[in-house]
Length: 217
Image (cartoon, rainbow, N blue to C red; front, side):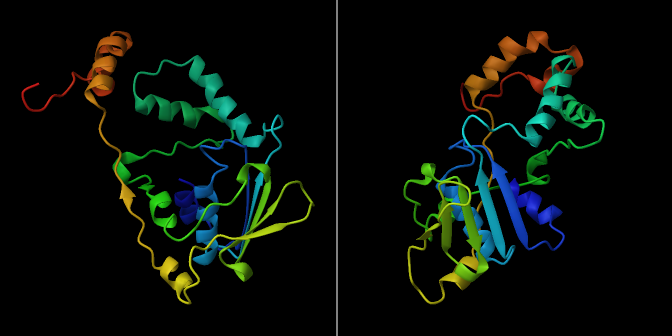
């Protein structure tokens, strides 16, 4: 989704600054590092700064926007996905919050970035101890990492190969588009029997339809 946002919102800017919390599954992991290396190699940016806030001090501006959504969501009747979209739209008086809808791949696409970039990049050792990372077009394939702000940089070459044409090969990569699988029968059954009774009649077959079975089941 970050990649999709960059493609849609970048107006020629060449220097990107990213601020994240320390969630390992979402932000502070090797796939994230590989992704920003990839962006610089492909020429999206000349430099990228990736900063992680100190644990215990990770509340910042975007959390306030999520708080607005949560505040309105609590006092709004929500029976289907379209209602969630409306909550997001109405949550910010200044229009800061916008719903990003998948729309069957038309709104954005899920990409198998991990699989393809894992072929070319290796893991950054002891990634969790670093808080600040720098990616530069003058040092392709290399990430600079700091443990503390304004501290010394440690440099890591994360390329798995020294092939002379490696950067052209990476630029030409075709990243597989992932299609989310449908709900499994167990989840369909749960929604139908446990959630459907609480949904307004006109939305029951949208949010909690009768489970669909194939074969003889």
